[in-house]
Length: 288
Image 1 (cartoon, one colour):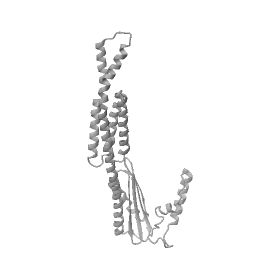
Image 2 (image 1 turned 180 degrees about the vertical axis):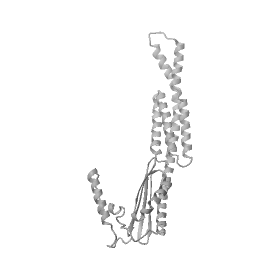
Image 3 (image 1 turned 90 degrees about the vertical axis):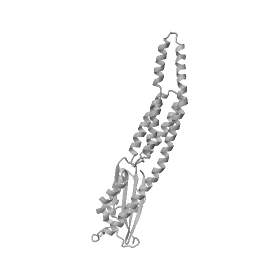
Image 4 (image 1 turned 135 degrees about the vertical axis):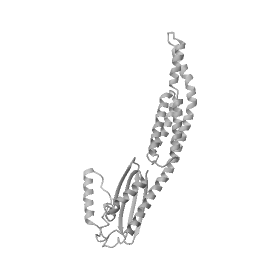
């Protein structure tokens, strides 16, 4: 769910910079910084972003740059600048966070510093329409970024699933070979004991023991989970949480395979399957 979008709206007397970025989050966590001149529209912006973006830790900024920046009369809100500087300095002292190298650039980008509001000027509908179009474009750029990331994740997940399927097939020859070896090892150990034992009872116990090592059910369930994971990816929008749940179920079956393998080569293959699954779990948080 990572993404980034930025637009600049050119107005006759100023430039409105709009920036939005998102990181992974299970829910919508939206933070906005909006210039005071457009503060009355902040709720409209928040509602629009929440509807379009849906999930993620989202950081939205909207700030103004005056076009006549080279003019010495450019309005800089010195009170706001000084307040920001004092507050940030206090936080740095209290927390021990390193001070920024370029204080001025940071402070000039803070809300209200470069846009001292003229109380006699009101926000017109035409200006807001132009700015809101810029907001829409920035959000769309973020969504396009997410889409590209989603396409890459789709290829990654399919490759991981295919490798798990291949590893599951690789288990079969070792699975068939281990039963005779287990039986031979047990009988050889019993033959060395200086006591007689009931061979019929021994066969019954051996069959029971070997049945407990059978992994056919686990293999079948894992195969079903793999198919379900792929079909869910191809389904409707907003399947990220479901993919996470399916990955958990896949992990349970792989762990059971490992506990029942009782054979070095099978255990090595199970470890490889766990590695592929771990890659899926790490990236599934990026899925909407």
